[in-house]
Length: 350
Length: 272
Image (tube, rainbow over all chains, first blue to last red; front, side):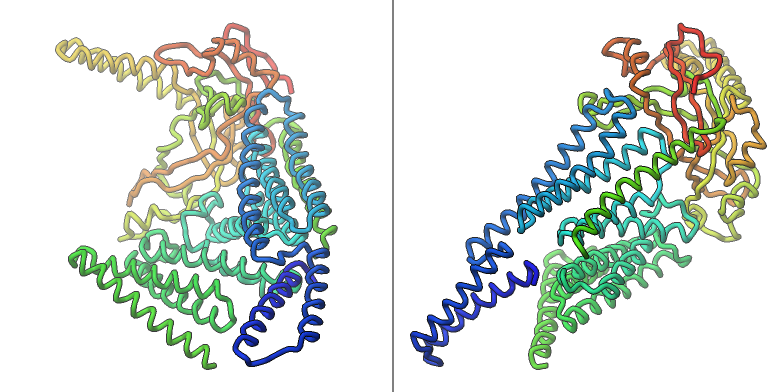
């Protein structure tokens, strides 16, 4: 059992207690005093054990505090990373080159050691998250500043190194923020590499949104190939960032066909990506419902709505009075709601 | 994944990535240099900063190169060798021509060569023309005098480093420009610039490395020039204040080997 599974068990116990109380109040079931106390004693022992072993939240208040701590550790990591960055820039000009290199190399090493130390001392991993993000920032600073010091020609392989480092820390300690950093770096590397397939120099990879469509689709592959038994929440992040990358790129191409690789008139390219955008986001909604991936359903529904609204804007913004335009938008929202409600009902029936 | 394994692998990755980078630097700086240029503040002025001086203590010099943004080629061979479609097919739109993706290339930089002489002659000719115009139209004195000052400042201050050629293979370029004290070959990104159905074809070049950091033991030369005002760039007809021995290595990446005030005699042989 890991911490996540332990937390699920705690949540189940809490839900069971609420439901039992409701059933007793409605007279559906009546447990004897002995039975009730036996269950209570057993649950209390389980909760104590789980709290001791995994430091899980066993009350509503603790859960709220945990969320606050997650937010604070993220903001703290951002602030400390910025502090490291500006501290180095403020003093590096006064250091000899060898000292600069030593400081740059030792930064990510020390922060990684600190991550391990924090993870050993605290099972909730708030401090490990903070130290891990600082280690990632130090490594980004490390390679990019070495490039400046020695006037090195930039390479997309730096993205791969950053992605590998962040993913190692993310998988090693189960840190979601590091996973997000690793996936974003990997997305940069994949998009740049896809860009070079057309003969383009990698630095210009951002000029062709299709690079991000292929990179985003490639990001959907790891959760299919790797089993995430111990880290069941990790595949969601791959799907989220992969589909975000695909849909944002499609949205750009649906409105600005000039940026495409395709050798067709821009308007035809825009039509193509509008159709693909509608189809893709609809498919995400369907897949999310079918595979019980609520985040993907929401993402698909959001992009379906954005595609629809941008299309309506293109068609009717100049032509219609503004009140009528927004009224039509509202009517479309109602239509979408009805369609989603039917899907929901069909899902419940199945 | 095993926590200990990931943690040790992360540490090994940091060490390996740094070793890879530093070995690359060592390779660049080993063996005979690809080029040794002795330039001045005109070609390597102090680089502009994106943050305040007190927030960034480094001191960098910026490579100033002329003709980088508007190089024109009379034939298609050069562009085809870089991977571009040329000439544009009949009926191809302006967009179709310019939307070809950028390519990795090498740019030849010429120092105080024929391109610089041509530039000097053109500037001189323009100055003479404006002076002539001034004698004919004294009522426009103010504007014409301003133009003369600008032209003189350009002749006195502008970089003598010109982008004169480009290609995909640095060795072929070096065999064409063997003088290593006058020609440097640097990595660049090239894109088609202006639509043209017939020659000349315009390209836009962007140097991949256009800044060099001043090492700590040499930065006092620049700091001593004008005390606290050392970051100021020369203006008008101010002469350059320092000269720099700039070396390009095996990977065509530059570094500063010597930096001294103009008043001092230049180094005959830059020390490694």
